[in-house]
Length: 218
Picture 1: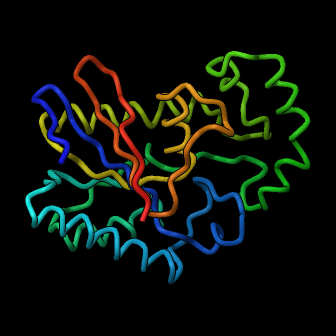
Picture 2 (picture 1 turned 90 degrees about the horizontal axis):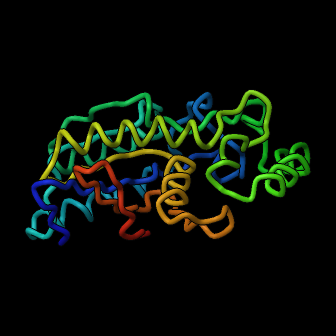
Picture 3 (picture 1 turned 30 degrees about the vertical axis):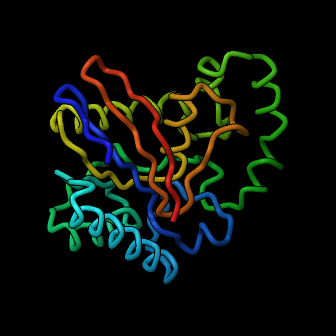
Protein backbone atom coordinates (compact mmCIF):
# COMPACT_ATOMS: atom_id res chain seq x y z
CA UNK A 1 0.00 0.00 0.00
CA UNK A 2 1.37 3.42 -0.98
CA UNK A 3 0.53 5.86 1.78
CA UNK A 4 0.85 9.53 0.84
CA UNK A 5 2.37 12.03 3.23
CA UNK A 6 0.28 15.00 4.35
CA UNK A 7 1.91 17.12 1.63
CA UNK A 8 1.33 14.53 -1.10
CA UNK A 9 -1.48 12.83 -2.97
CA UNK A 10 -1.44 9.48 -4.76
CA UNK A 11 -3.32 9.44 -8.06
CA UNK A 12 -4.47 6.18 -9.63
CA UNK A 13 -5.13 7.02 -13.29
CA UNK A 14 -7.21 4.35 -14.99
CA UNK A 15 -7.45 4.21 -18.76
CA UNK A 16 -11.07 3.66 -19.79
CA UNK A 17 -12.26 0.23 -20.95
CA UNK A 18 -12.13 -0.90 -24.55
CA UNK A 19 -14.38 0.60 -27.22
CA UNK A 20 -15.10 -0.60 -30.74
CA UNK A 21 -12.78 2.06 -32.15
CA UNK A 22 -9.96 0.87 -29.88
CA UNK A 23 -10.47 -2.66 -31.14
CA UNK A 24 -10.49 -1.45 -34.76
CA UNK A 25 -7.32 0.65 -34.42
CA UNK A 26 -9.07 3.95 -35.08
CA UNK A 27 -8.00 7.32 -33.68
CA UNK A 28 -10.74 8.41 -31.32
CA UNK A 29 -10.15 11.67 -29.52
CA UNK A 30 -12.22 14.22 -27.68
CA UNK A 31 -14.70 14.59 -30.56
CA UNK A 32 -15.39 10.85 -30.78
CA UNK A 33 -17.80 10.16 -27.94
CA UNK A 34 -18.35 6.41 -28.06
CA UNK A 35 -19.42 3.93 -25.35
CA UNK A 36 -17.58 0.89 -24.05
CA UNK A 37 -18.00 -2.37 -25.91
CA UNK A 38 -18.71 -5.69 -24.16
CA UNK A 39 -14.99 -6.27 -23.54
CA UNK A 40 -14.66 -2.77 -22.12
CA UNK A 41 -17.51 -3.30 -19.68
CA UNK A 42 -15.91 -6.56 -18.53
CA UNK A 43 -12.52 -4.86 -18.05
CA UNK A 44 -14.06 -2.01 -16.06
CA UNK A 45 -16.08 -4.40 -13.92
CA UNK A 46 -13.00 -6.48 -13.09
CA UNK A 47 -10.65 -3.61 -12.25
CA UNK A 48 -13.29 -1.92 -10.08
CA UNK A 49 -13.84 -5.18 -8.21
CA UNK A 50 -10.07 -5.49 -7.72
CA UNK A 51 -9.76 -1.97 -6.28
CA UNK A 52 -12.78 -2.57 -4.03
CA UNK A 53 -11.22 -5.81 -2.80
CA UNK A 54 -7.95 -4.06 -1.94
CA UNK A 55 -9.89 -1.41 -0.09
CA UNK A 56 -11.85 -3.98 1.92
CA UNK A 57 -8.56 -5.63 2.89
CA UNK A 58 -7.24 -2.28 4.17
CA UNK A 59 -4.54 -2.11 1.48
CA UNK A 60 -5.98 0.96 -0.19
CA UNK A 61 -8.42 3.77 0.48
CA UNK A 62 -9.85 5.90 -2.33
CA UNK A 63 -11.08 9.27 -1.09
CA UNK A 64 -12.68 10.55 -4.30
CA UNK A 65 -13.49 9.51 -7.87
CA UNK A 66 -12.87 11.67 -10.94
CA UNK A 67 -13.41 11.16 -14.65
CA UNK A 68 -13.24 12.69 -18.07
CA UNK A 69 -16.75 13.59 -19.16
CA UNK A 70 -16.61 11.45 -22.33
CA UNK A 71 -18.98 8.47 -22.27
CA UNK A 72 -16.31 5.75 -22.35
CA UNK A 73 -14.62 7.24 -19.28
CA UNK A 74 -17.85 7.90 -17.38
CA UNK A 75 -19.09 4.35 -18.02
CA UNK A 76 -15.78 2.98 -16.72
CA UNK A 77 -15.95 5.25 -13.66
CA UNK A 78 -19.50 4.03 -13.03
CA UNK A 79 -18.21 0.63 -11.96
CA UNK A 80 -15.87 2.25 -9.43
CA UNK A 81 -18.72 4.46 -8.23
CA UNK A 82 -20.84 1.38 -7.52
CA UNK A 83 -18.06 -0.64 -5.87
CA UNK A 84 -16.66 2.21 -3.77
CA UNK A 85 -19.91 4.09 -3.13
CA UNK A 86 -18.42 7.34 -4.42
CA UNK A 87 -19.93 9.99 -6.71
CA UNK A 88 -18.22 10.69 -10.03
CA UNK A 89 -16.76 14.17 -10.42
CA UNK A 90 -16.56 14.85 -14.16
CA UNK A 91 -13.81 17.02 -15.67
CA UNK A 92 -13.83 18.19 -19.33
CA UNK A 93 -10.09 18.93 -19.09
CA UNK A 94 -9.38 15.21 -18.65
CA UNK A 95 -10.77 14.44 -22.12
CA UNK A 96 -8.70 12.69 -24.77
CA UNK A 97 -6.57 14.66 -27.22
CA UNK A 98 -8.22 16.25 -30.25
CA UNK A 99 -6.78 14.41 -33.26
CA UNK A 100 -7.96 17.08 -35.68
CA UNK A 101 -8.26 15.93 -39.30
CA UNK A 102 -7.19 12.39 -38.34
CA UNK A 103 -10.08 11.93 -35.89
CA UNK A 104 -12.10 8.85 -36.72
CA UNK A 105 -9.51 7.46 -39.15
CA UNK A 106 -7.22 4.42 -38.72
CA UNK A 107 -3.78 4.90 -37.18
CA UNK A 108 -2.27 4.12 -40.58
CA UNK A 109 -4.09 7.14 -42.07
CA UNK A 110 -2.14 9.44 -39.78
CA UNK A 111 1.22 7.95 -40.70
CA UNK A 112 0.48 7.87 -44.42
CA UNK A 113 -0.60 11.52 -44.53
CA UNK A 114 1.57 13.23 -41.93
CA UNK A 115 4.34 10.76 -41.14
CA UNK A 116 6.97 12.54 -43.28
CA UNK A 117 6.15 15.92 -41.72
CA UNK A 118 6.36 14.48 -38.20
CA UNK A 119 9.71 12.89 -39.07
CA UNK A 120 10.96 16.29 -40.28
CA UNK A 121 9.80 17.97 -37.07
CA UNK A 122 11.49 15.26 -34.98
CA UNK A 123 14.76 15.87 -36.82
CA UNK A 124 14.45 19.65 -36.59
CA UNK A 125 13.67 19.70 -32.86
CA UNK A 126 15.82 17.14 -31.00
CA UNK A 127 14.56 18.42 -27.63
CA UNK A 128 11.32 16.59 -26.86
CA UNK A 129 9.71 19.40 -24.90
CA UNK A 130 10.20 21.82 -27.82
CA UNK A 131 9.11 19.22 -30.36
CA UNK A 132 5.80 18.70 -28.53
CA UNK A 133 4.87 22.28 -29.41
CA UNK A 134 4.59 21.05 -33.03
CA UNK A 135 3.37 17.46 -32.72
CA UNK A 136 1.13 15.91 -33.79
CA UNK A 137 1.52 17.56 -37.20
CA UNK A 138 -2.09 16.83 -38.11
CA UNK A 139 -4.12 19.88 -39.18
CA UNK A 140 -6.46 21.14 -36.44
CA UNK A 141 -5.03 18.67 -33.89
CA UNK A 142 -4.20 19.58 -30.31
CA UNK A 143 -0.45 19.65 -29.68
CA UNK A 144 1.05 17.37 -27.04
CA UNK A 145 2.30 20.36 -25.02
CA UNK A 146 -1.23 21.81 -24.87
CA UNK A 147 -2.68 18.43 -23.92
CA UNK A 148 -0.10 18.04 -21.15
CA UNK A 149 -0.78 21.53 -19.79
CA UNK A 150 -4.57 21.19 -19.56
CA UNK A 151 -4.50 17.72 -18.04
CA UNK A 152 -1.73 18.32 -15.49
CA UNK A 153 -3.40 21.54 -14.36
CA UNK A 154 -6.58 19.58 -13.73
CA UNK A 155 -4.74 16.76 -11.96
CA UNK A 156 -2.92 19.30 -9.80
CA UNK A 157 -6.22 20.82 -8.66
CA UNK A 158 -7.59 17.38 -7.82
CA UNK A 159 -4.42 16.44 -5.93
CA UNK A 160 -4.21 19.66 -3.93
CA UNK A 161 -7.82 19.20 -2.84
CA UNK A 162 -6.91 15.70 -1.59
CA UNK A 163 -3.51 16.05 0.10
CA UNK A 164 -2.69 13.08 2.30
CA UNK A 165 -5.16 10.95 0.34
CA UNK A 166 -5.42 8.60 -2.65
CA UNK A 167 -7.73 9.50 -5.52
CA UNK A 168 -8.86 7.60 -8.60
CA UNK A 169 -9.08 9.27 -12.00
CA UNK A 170 -10.47 7.73 -15.21
CA UNK A 171 -9.01 9.23 -18.38
CA UNK A 172 -7.66 8.30 -21.81
CA UNK A 173 -4.71 6.63 -23.48
CA UNK A 174 -2.98 9.60 -25.06
CA UNK A 175 -3.54 11.71 -21.94
CA UNK A 176 -1.77 9.08 -19.83
CA UNK A 177 0.95 8.37 -22.39
CA UNK A 178 1.82 12.06 -22.68
CA UNK A 179 1.99 12.44 -18.90
CA UNK A 180 4.27 9.39 -18.54
CA UNK A 181 6.50 10.57 -21.39
CA UNK A 182 6.88 13.94 -19.72
CA UNK A 183 7.56 12.58 -16.24
CA UNK A 184 10.14 10.04 -17.44
CA UNK A 185 11.47 12.27 -20.26
CA UNK A 186 11.09 9.49 -22.82
CA UNK A 187 10.85 9.49 -26.59
CA UNK A 188 7.60 8.35 -28.19
CA UNK A 189 8.58 4.73 -28.87
CA UNK A 190 9.99 4.32 -25.35
CA UNK A 191 6.89 5.42 -23.41
CA UNK A 192 5.15 2.56 -21.55
CA UNK A 193 1.48 2.48 -22.47
CA UNK A 194 -1.28 1.18 -20.19
CA UNK A 195 -3.79 -1.26 -21.62
CA UNK A 196 -7.50 -0.51 -21.45
CA UNK A 197 -8.32 -0.34 -17.72
CA UNK A 198 -4.63 -0.41 -16.86
CA UNK A 199 -3.70 1.67 -13.81
CA UNK A 200 -0.94 4.29 -13.84
CA UNK A 201 0.14 5.35 -10.36
CA UNK A 202 1.49 8.87 -9.86
CA UNK A 203 2.53 10.80 -6.77
CA UNK A 204 1.88 14.53 -6.52
CA UNK A 205 3.85 16.69 -4.08
CA UNK A 206 2.79 20.09 -2.81
CA UNK A 207 5.86 21.66 -4.43
CA UNK A 208 3.95 21.17 -7.71
CA UNK A 209 5.79 18.11 -9.00
CA UNK A 210 4.44 14.78 -10.21
CA UNK A 211 6.35 11.50 -9.95
CA UNK A 212 5.61 8.40 -12.01
CA UNK A 213 5.54 5.29 -9.81
CA UNK A 214 4.31 2.33 -11.88
CA UNK A 215 1.80 0.85 -14.31
CA UNK A 216 -0.39 -2.10 -13.36
CA UNK A 217 -2.32 -3.86 -16.13
CA UNK A 218 -5.13 -6.37 -15.63
